[in-house]
Length: 289
Figure 1 (spheres, rainbow, N blue to C red):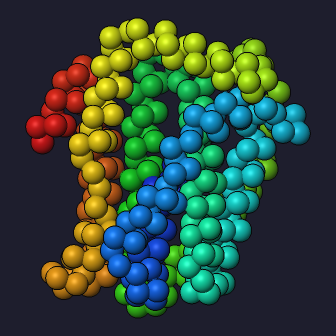
Figure 2 (cartoon, rainbow, N blue to C red; figure 1 turned 135 degrees about the vertical axis):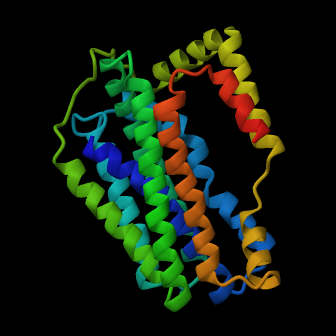
């Protein structure tokens, strides 16, 4: 559970990397908001490939491990990429793009492995496990976001964004240390171990079966429609609030603190009051609010 909590905390701290990179591109490289928005979309591509990482970690063991080795690789990649930006933050745009892309790949890889462990824990407690773990993950992500936003508020206002990257590097090092203490496993819950290609075929077949279920199909369509019709303009918002509204970097980061506090509060409200509510009603309430 320590690894789960720390990795979800690390996922929440992505806001630190986001705020630091926005400051780096705007204040040090002088990029236009449209360019920064394109860069942020590019470096976030690894998060769209999480299904591929899951297939790899489940079916292609490394050194006899189907979980531990991938967390170790991801933690090392996060540490090295963030360390590079700590040492050479303004050396070149290409280096910044590459290291941010690598860091997102590392975080997404660790996130997939931890998600699979979360599913295993939930199976052990079928009655309340899913709801409690969902609240736990939301709280850890929110706390990570709170800490990351607070650090960014002071560091980007008073110093260089390199120190934000250093904090992310140290988080990767901490995840590496905890991952190395995990026991290696050859299988999980008696799952059949397939090769990568057979696993892809099986997953596609399972997706076809799931898509025939109206509950799954409608939920998937709802999420896709939400992502398509509610775009994000984080970089444009950042430039607008700093240049037009004249917010300081400190105040902008404090807005993110409020956002992350709401995530923690919402996770606790869900755990205490809404854990057994119908998901359709929760989706509808979310749209209304």
